[in-house]
Image (cartoon, one colour):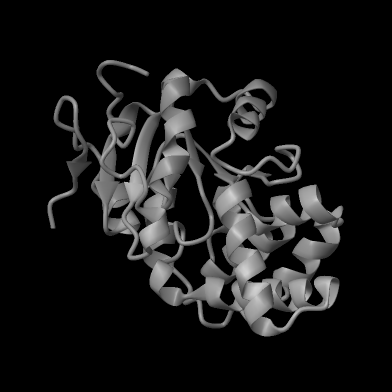
Length: 235
């Protein structure tokens, strides 16, 4: 990891997580996804809703994503799983013209790196009105179905898509997912989340920047973090 992180205006490639990062966690889109996961598990394992919820939580905790756990323990086809769980109503997400403007003014390439699918990312970005900014949607399939924070996807993104870590930034709502990015030499930005499970690792040195408002942060970027800790955008 760089001793002194790059300033944001020096970044040549911006790598953004999708869910709860490019739209607010308060949208609670994951509630729909979680319900769909539960339905899938109920049908697969012939469980009631409570039993499926326990399995879902255990798999997420052990494997990083419920899907990875279902693949490992039950041989589930990941494409069928994602098609089911991402068949959701996106109308609860508001279009984001301010984020659109901030991305337009942000120099450098823009990429999405998600534990979801390309199709889910396409639908969300279209709903937000920001799809045209992104040259690459790097999904869980491209990462050999190894979810963040497993280093596999980070390495493949760097090796196959011309991302130079020392000139790149990673933006995430799950703080622990920034650790492999920082280890590669990327600048890291945590979009603070109200979700307890997203805060794990937030106090670690690999979180170099943090903000409550991604759009504002991108629009006014240039804050250097204090040495050895995370920098918060004022306001």
